[in-house]
Amino acid sequence: MTKILISVLVFLMGLTAQAQDPFQKFEDMQNVASIVVNQKMLKMLSQFDLNTDDPEMKNYVDLVNSLNDIKFYSTKDTDTAKLMRTEFNKYLGMAKLDELMRVKDDGKNVQFYAKPGKSDDYVSEFVMFIDGINNADDTVIAKITGNINLKEIGKIASSINFSGSEELKNVKVN
Amino acid sequence: MIKYVIIVFLAVMTVSCNGEQSLQEYYVDHKENDNFVMLDVPASLISPKTDKLSPNQKEVLQTVKKINILALLLNAETKTLLKPETEKVKAILSRDGYEELMSFGKPSQRMRLYFKGDEDAIDEVVVFAQDESKGFVLARVLGDNMNVADMVKLTQTINQDSSSFKTGQFEGIMDIFKDK
Image (tube, rainbow over all chains, first blue to last red):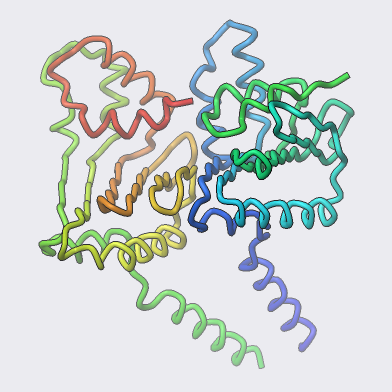
């Protein structure tokens, strides 16, 4: 009986305990601008141009459809930026991400990481960090989850009008 | 033993249900409050008077039942209200069966978008926009099986012609969806 009770309790707790996003706390911080797009929104967005015959557009719709969520956080404040760096490094160790590449663009250090997906071109999670501390520019964390085709991810850049989203265009796959 | 479990379970449920406001109750509670501006727009007002629309378009429009807008405009008196009221609305939206679609901005100025229903048959869309220096706007679009894709198509056709269409608020809301 006790066993059943415990398993019921554990089950209930599992329902209420949400998987906490380590970056979510930045959303409520002053000096931090953010954009969060959830799966349902992406599904709706992908419905818009279903009738299109344009293959380019179709690729785009497919890409949007394959994503779970998109999160961008950015700050110009040095202290907050340092905190972002700390949290990001912590997350790298925890989530076991592979480094994809680093880019030095305009004095900004941009790093791309990913969690392997079902094949080489596809990743289940994509993370970008832009370090803007040294040149007083925006420091940005971007996290995208889903079944992501790395070849297509640059296309998201044009849809998200957010600091640092342009850097996504630099992602290259061999 | 089982009885005991059931009682505890029921108690927990009652506690979590009681004393919690729904968004509807929040609207009603603030209707009479002078610090808030309330606007109820029935669907008949946003529908065009002309017959220019195709039956298909009319059908899409008919899925919208009404639009409720509640706004807190900041002045010297209402300044202190913004924070507690924002927290209240956020709390309601996070538990009253709403799903967050997206949010953007910063703590001083943010817009959030929620919905209720299925993604291709939406019952309610909520836009919650808040600005530290101006106040907040809480808009609800209530409907029956609304479809975002259909609506965007509709607003696009409407933008092209028809001046008799009173879409002021409606467009503002739909612009969020179009902006991609």
